[in-house]
Length: 421
Image 1 (cartoon, rainbow, N blue to C red):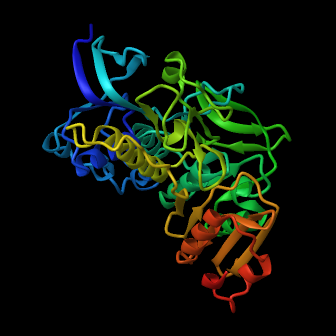
Image 2: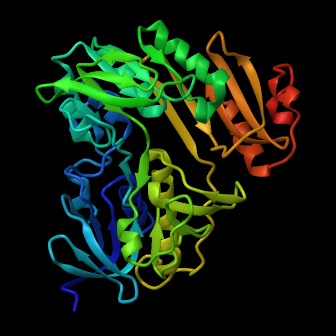
Image 3: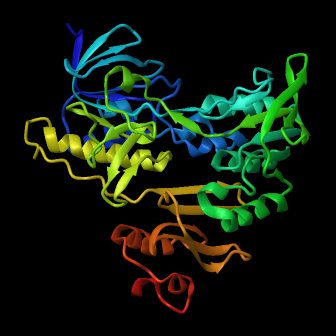
């Protein structure tokens, strides 16, 4: 027998659960809501982890998704430092780390992702950091204050943002990565070369085409990063930003169907294989009606949008709590959006994502840092990246959604209005 019952159980202490709770209340849902998260802090925005909170410009309170009083004011029960250890989807009962058993009507699994760890020699030395949570950022900032040089392993979002943030703190930073230029895997060589040029212009060393071999140190502390090529870099501290792995341990134990991309398999309305259970955020692998393929996206803004979509789906089933729901959740049809800033040096916005592309069309000037790159596959736009041209993304969203053939030369020709394509 469950010790208590709730109408909605939100599993995971991130922005997907927080956005779902908010949207449920805004939609008039009057039932009980319980949010359970293993994080030490209430739900917070992720960008400050590698930016404002890392540099000390934003406090923990500044990063919170909602002020502390919001939860009580909206009658949402919040349990931090607590996890769901078992989920029985047939009985609709969850077991918490507190040993309490909670019966639920509908549930959201938004357990996020865990950092990908590199099991190389020396990886247990002090001074080696992974960056995923607010407390990681606080520990990193405190640690690097006593050291001049930091090596970052990885050239994607985390790597480049951390390099920019720590450079602002007066540290000498170097990036080591397998790609030839930063962001090459996500944005291609041309756009990647632009961002690398910005980093290098501000003193960040970038070493591309390098594979990590080991860490070396003395007295239990890291002192050097050694690559397979023999490249050796002195390091007072190291930050590893080599991706994340969706946390599906609970979902697997509950018998939910998992997707080949490592996430929880969902339909177009973000419903899992278990009745009444949805997924959102890093673990959600859904049938995208926009892209015509299965999609799993790791980004905090996507998690927010999916959390809201799950709330709408729950409301469709349950209504406001009086049984007035329509019972027909609508497909999630949002084109995923990303943004990133490298200190105050430059910023990017991106819609997509593109699993692959065979052509690029650049509108504007890469050299001037004022451009939009459209990514095409089989003649159709599948993604777009912009620096300084946010309005172009509205047209990109339309083109991605229609999946119509577009002339690449016309995309690049600024004498042709995007609205005519």
